[in-house]
Length: 54
Image 1 (cartoon, rainbow, N blue to C red):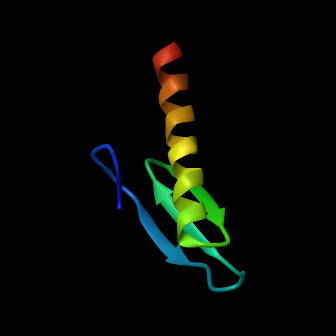
Image 2: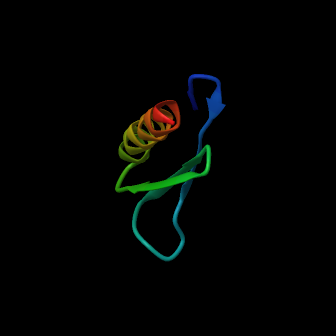
């Protein structure tokens, strides 16, 4: 999966229930793959806004 041109790695968490997503130095967790990806989209957009404000 990708957000723009950034790759997103989604994997199952061993010691917890659910999935995690890593992209652009952000880590998110969710109960399903889709939830982890949706949270990652929000986290990446938040980071881009912060960088743009500088």
